[in-house]
Image 1 (spheres, rainbow, N blue to C red):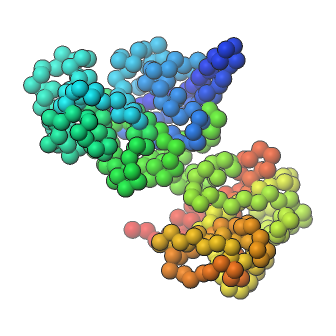
Image 2: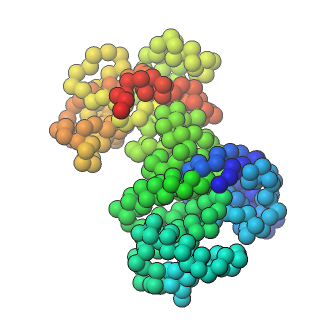
Image 3: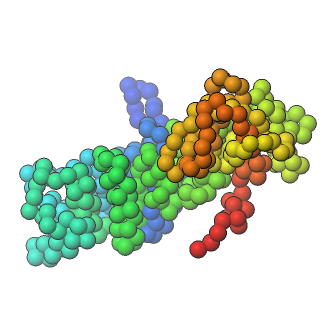
Length: 379
């Protein structure tokens, strides 16, 4: 177990004389035993960052430190780091037991009997104790994933690295394995860096999440902080499904204005904007109340365009004009009966809105996580 630090880590690739910056000055501290998820869209630098930690890619500048020791120049085998790949990378001609034993046999002087005992104990923990004699081709995707994980666990490394290990599984098994991975990592207490493009995995698995875009670190936060207090518009848009609703608006007097609607602001919110005049208004679908009658200046008459049933909830697409394209998405209770073409009122409560500088994308006002927690029942 160890603390892992990325200090201004940068990776530049040379493409026929042209520098391509894949990772740009990423800095983050991963605590001993922490589960950190690197998340972002495809091509944002997640896997390259992971490969630099593992020693599979060189670091162009910056430092990677393991328990305070700089490991930039150390080869992978000396870093005491275990990696689980997206492809599982199992040897097809070896049995499960041989796959799990191979790393220990090649890198340690541990007696064969001790290796065998450790492999069998780990296999039982992972629920694959009865598969030790099989080869990878005889296993399901979920079983292969457990073998790859077991091969990493038996090494008892300081750090686990996982590069989208669940992406090859079907949706139901992926959900099951998310829970399994969390349980195993918590029991082992090993610092873990997990790469995914799936925001659901990031939100449900990570102690903290690090959001990347175009090689740059956007925010490092707990899942709730990233969701309710995004540092910029990219994070607000990327985290959450359906995505946050956005409208570009202009500050005029005591209200925000746009072609679609005007939104009066309290003095406290106006002060948060400072001298910014062009802002992007944001509100999450579940924070919109769909009611039958307007009651104040934050209520807007709209028409239902499409209702998307999701089981326990419905995504309702709303338009300011009958027959117009959807302007707003609201999430309501799944038992509620709503129909396309039905006139309704969308209530956009001011405490729930987010405001961003349109030019820079930086957050100017977020929903207060502290206030939200005060309204939620505690167990």
